[in-house]
Image (tube, rainbow, N blue to C red; front, side, top):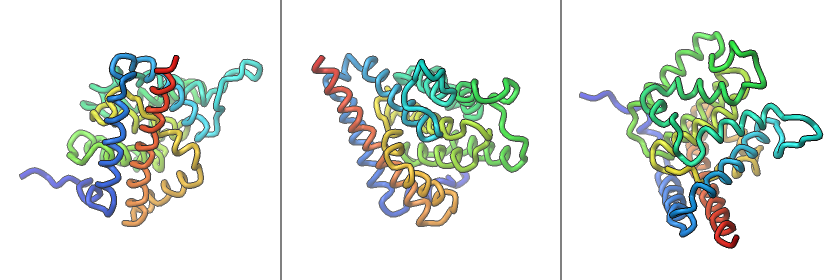
Length: 248
């Protein structure tokens, strides 16, 4: 008999399934937009850029590069992560599906390249508890059958609150969540920009993350539902990008 899926109860929390389905439908609509049928590489590149900027701001970085002030290491790292995932053609998809911890380490190496010593890149903090939780997360990623919005929310929340590396953890958490949506087929080409939803509501973002960390029914529900709301908002952003591109 197969072991029970530890994430299955999360998918049954009130409102989670409906919010996830709304996100799925919104992303499917964005993918069907006429511009995204053939011109998706350009819209995916724009989505990746916007995602990187929003993720940077959430970690205290800049929204745009300013040559007069020198490179912002947080934004530079977020841009590298976005580039690695751009358009859903990332070689990290196979790695994520086979060995999630390797994919997480790779994204950290990109995100933190200008923020920490080389020997710390991709290496979690020396804390046995951190290692165990990462191993548990990897096991869940490779075995769970929950809907993609739930999995994306869980990996995002777990990496965000665990902060396994001690630097660039937010950028990594959002990048891994993005990778999960791409690899699962929820947003195959990476057209959505859920990061902007969180950037516009940073207080709500942090409060929802604390709710996830609490492990309470209410806290978990709020995080999962809000994560799907972010995906839905990100799909609306994808449509806006496509519409703007169609008018050029």
